[in-house]
Every structure is written in C-alpha cells, then in structure tokens.
Image (tube, rainbow, N blue to C red; front, top):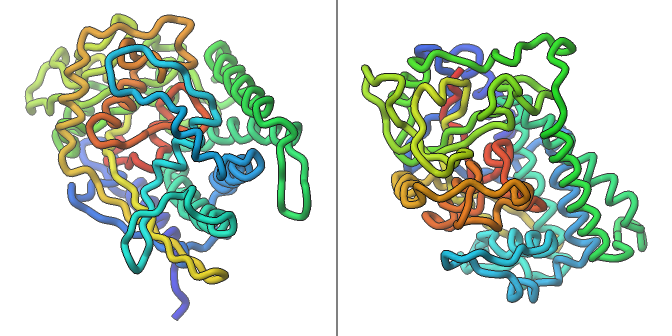
Length: 409
C-alpha cells in the first residue's frame, strides 16, 4: 500500500477540525495531552505537498548559513553576551543570532543517543542535516499556514526581503555553492532591510475595502474567550492575537490601538463560569508596563498556544542519512506564568528600542519579548526568529517551539 505522509494526515486532521469542530464558538486546533510526544520522520514527508512559502523560508536560512560561513563560526558563540543578570546587555549581530540558533539545536545521534553539536559535523554532514531539517520545518510551518493565512503573508514578505539581499550580495562559486562578497556587509544590509520592512508595516494603513473586511471584525464577546479559556487553556499557556485574525495580507489593525500590531500575553488565571469582564486573566507588557490584563481587554479573536521542546534525532550514514523530529510538550506550563508575574511593574520599551526589543529585556519589555524572555528562563526554549532582534506575535506562532491548542473566534 502506498504510504501516506504525516503531512497529508495532519492537513486532513487540521482541515476537519476547522470545518466541523466548534464548542461555544471556539474552534479547536490542537488540545493534545500535556505529556504528548510526537515524532515526524523526514522519510514520510511528501515534499511536493509542502507550502512553497514555508519551503523558501528554510531554503533561505540554509543558503545564508553556508554562503556566509556561519557553519564554521562556532567561535562566535564565545562572543555572545549571556543574559544571566538583571542588567542591560550588548546587542548581538544577526550573524551571532544565526550561530545561537544553530548551537541551540538539540541533536542526538540515532544509535548512541549521544548529544551532537551542529558545529562538530563536517560540512557534508552539515549540508545533509540542514537539508532534512528544512523539510521537517517546512512541514510544520505548512500546517500552521493552513490554520492562519496571515502567517503565510508575513513570512512571504520576509522571504522577499531576504531573497533580494541574497541576490545582491551572494555569488555562485561553483554549481550549488554560494559565497557572500562581504559577510559583514551582507548581515548589515539584511538587518537594515528587515527593519525598514517592519517600519513600513507599522506606518501603513491597510486598504480594507480591497479585501472586503472590517477593521473591527476581530472583536468578540468576552464570554467566548471565557469559554475557550475554561475548556482548553492552562495557567502558563500563551494568548496571541494577530492584527487581522484569519485574514491574509493585512498586518495592522488601526481599529484598536493595543492590538494594531498584534498582542501576546501569558495566561495566569483560568476564569470561572461566571467571571466578570474585568477579571484579570493574563500578564502582559503594554505601554504602561508589565501588568494584568482582563477578559474584556482581550475580547478579540486569538489563539491559545502551548510550548514544546524539539529534539532532532540524526542518522548519518554518508550518502544515506536520515532525520526525525521528536516533540515533547511542556507539561508544567504554570512555571511560565510565575516567571511572567515576577516582572510585574517593569516598564515598556522606549520608542527607539522597539525594533531591537529583545536586548532591552529584562529591564523593559514588549508583549512578545516578555513571552520570549520567560520561555527561555522557564524551559530554555528560544521562541525567536533567526534574523530578528524583535519578536512579533506572528513570530511566536510560527516558531517550532509553539503549538496551537485552540483558535478562539
């Protein structure tokens, strides 16, 4: 019998859930058990079925790693500033962010179960590993795009920026091998272009008439959120709202100030069945600083999400290599809530720090950097993109360490 890939099965499952599963107007994406372990084998993935935007994202990452020589730059890890104290830190370069992501990959050898560093592999093995890794990453991201079209639009815009810089700065040395003319210039240009894109998205007003949606269409009655939280949330899960929930090509919601670029927070309390609209449910960073936010404040379509640890099991046999991903969901999410609560009263980032908001933490936060920082402290999970010095709500949802438990709409 012809083998059906995990991707196709997952697509069918997600499609069925979105079409047919509703409870008190809450659409469920995933409510797996706390201790659930999920394995995905690259051999079972039908690459032809993967979303092209998702594939392009990880192809770009692979190209940058080898074209810039980052795969041989583990010495940069020693230059990274470790955020272990409560002081402001030096801002790492994008090159260092790439090294940090590669060095944080949890890789074990298949037969011995011994830990492997990406930087200890020879170049052929590195290339084979990232080839397999990119397929499994694209599989997971493809599934998330099915659930949320806005995520695909965001990644597509980023891909265009990255590909334009690659076209300008990378030359082909020989068939299939690339090299940047100037590594520092490449990463400087990449950072500048991505910052320009973020600024444009903050400044533009979406043409809602062109796509036939209302800027207020994200609003829901707080009782829907209350029901969703009671049924599917745990203390320590994450709440994420995107600018225009389930609407592609719209990034900003100017109909509501606090949600115009999306919003995120850490769930601290599961409301009772009769909880009032003013009951606090989330700790988050707003313009007035880190504090509690109520059901009424969060009465917008949003996602309840959980954290998970990802392990890569690597089989290296020269020309016959293989990889599978082992995902274990965090079973003590309340630890994240406790970390979030410990930063109550911390101020919001200064206006000029927004695009490099990671590096203002833990002195000052945005809503998303509070989640990012606390996930690192609680579980050593880095919910952060490869080439960004800020964290976006969409970036949280697309990260491999985040899974969607519920879509409240």
